[in-house]
Image 1 (cartoon, one colour):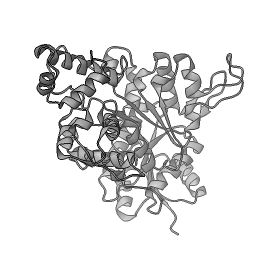
Image 2: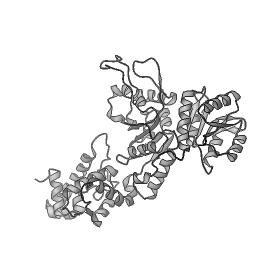
Image 3: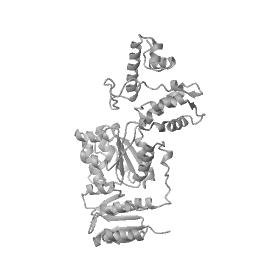
Image 4: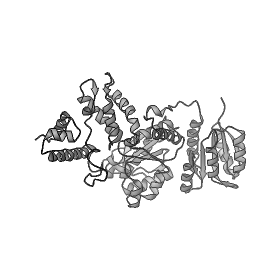
Length: 449
């Protein structure tokens, strides 16, 4: 079996020697270069599995070498060596495609972990499921682009910020990035930041020592330690209070955490993924989210499209959901008119709402074919224009999606009844509903009287 081959690029002889000894003890062959020109010459001659490069070199910037390697026919993982405290430089390198970074003075334990992770990406025999198409469904161009970006992001350790509306699949994407990465065989820890009481957040994130506060009856590992070696996904990161934002920033920069009541910091090796449906950039401008933390978690951003912007994927998603909901039974047919109605609907709740609609339809349909009436789509798109000031914006922090949609339906039905002098048949016709579907809605909204 061929030994892994690494390229070391640094103009300091003692650093080169330290790296050569470390990699040799890991049974990794090395070639060294003092500058970018020599490094490029080696890259033309040999097939390397890994590159470690300093940022400041005699004939240029290490970022130039990172960019050069990314354009090779077979890009390899590049880890950059930065001066202590040069986090901005490390972030810039990862934006350009670097796998990860290591700060001087070099921590050998962290370096060895980084090297092991990088070599997993270079190993063609590593068992890894690469077919994201079977999990993240959709043949639209926008979804093909998302899947391509996931494959690229999986080859890095850079923090990724996933944005998108509620129900658009942010956690699913985070899990795929983890599964495709060199950390795929380690733990994936997901946490909803909005679901943790503020007074417990520090303990949940960083752990605590027995007796550090009332109720701390034993030592407890935090989420960072639970995800050590793997990936930590912070959903709804916008809900973090300012005091924890400061501590999270330090944990990311130092790669260490301090449990509550503990004097010593504990090193942790996690890849951080975060997400929210809110606009973090606006929150930064408003002063409610720290700008420095925003830049740390948003090294690479991935924007997920709402379902209404990829309506061509709805038939495939519908078939998948119905198949999942009828595992032991024959999957029902769905009429062409029902599919058309789904493709025209705006889906404020995105894929999650599609699943709820289809689950409800299965309970209502006649046992043969799901039709438009069985879907009972909320009366949102057809009764209010985007400029209608009477239609409120949906804010999940204030009300549930069901309550929001029920409110709009109630208003649309009331308006139709008033305009038709409370003639239910005429009101149903105005709304484009069958009388059966109209009566179902009246009953659901307690409007039968």
